[in-house]
Image 1 (cartoon, rainbow, N blue to C red):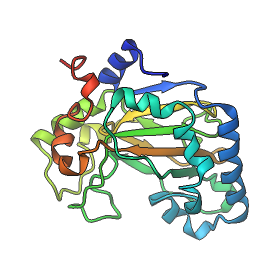
Image 2 (cartoon, rainbow, N blue to C red):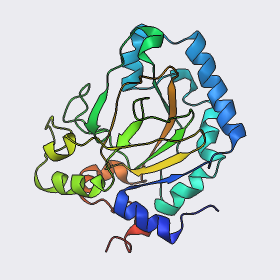
Image 3 (cartoon, rainbow, N blue to C red):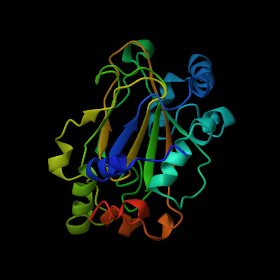
Amino acid sequence: MPAMTQQEMAEFVREGAIIRRNFVPSDLVNRARSLIDDWYRRELQPDLIESYTQRTFAPGLGTHPDVLALFHRSGVADLVESLVPDTQPVSTTQIQIRVPDAVTGVTQSAKAMHVDGVSCPHLDPAELRTFTLLVGIVLSEVNERDSGALRYVPGGHLRMAEWFSTEWSVGMTDQVPPHIDGEEGTPLLGQPGDVLLMHHLVPHAVGQNSSTAPRVMAYFRVAHTRHAHQRLQALRDPWLEYAPLRSFAV
């Protein structure tokens, strides 16, 4: 089992994220990417880009076995288990593409700093769609921050938990506190097959893609088995659903 090392667990507690480089086998990456590329060439509708961005690109591929294999047949599921042993089944994929502006003539909106599922602009502020752990698998080269790279705030999970505990309440429209909203974040640069494991509470953003190639990511949202019953508590206690990490967080 390719479980997390003690050093990686300590890093995850401190930073809220770790990256495993060149982790997903190339055959799995190539099969998934071929399906997505075919959809992109044949079925992408430029006038629906904002809708795709809020939900998923290639919606018909979210449950395709070759896309789910990125999680279930690559060893990623074992990495996840070493962080969150008790999880709900992962049965769907969110495919996110940052489309080059020059390709479609449609400007894809940037995403401001946020925590997934909290005060989403397109949802009722009182509605929470949170989870435990975000797994992102890189499916295209991302060499520059301006090529649509995800940008995250290392250590931001601890700052967000404090904010959720002391200042935030259900129904607020602010997604993050001002001191985090103004941060640029660290860009996720990498190659196909790289894996990001990121605590749900880590704030992140994404900008427009000024390159000539689409940036393609597959995201898997992992939820603890009891998450639906303890959403608010999990926002305020970053290690509630990470039993193996509690000793590192003392």
